[in-house]
Image 1 (cartoon, rainbow, N blue to C red):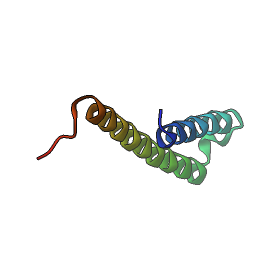
Image 2 (tube, helix red, strand yellow):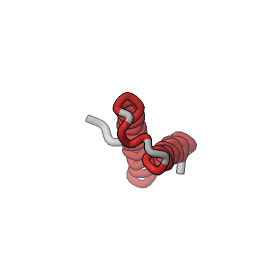
Image 3 (cartoon, rainbow, N blue to C red):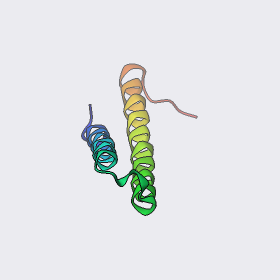
Length: 69
């Protein structure tokens, strides 16, 4: 796993833990906090997906050569 993929995955996991802790602490009804956290989670999901796709493409290139065209 590349550093970028590991970092993105870790950040997303940390945000999920923060959401669970916030919910347990009674912040589930705090709209501004929840909106901010959910937006950050969406950005983290996008970063994780991009890193995963990039890593898959890199592995494919190592196995069968670069794709051209």
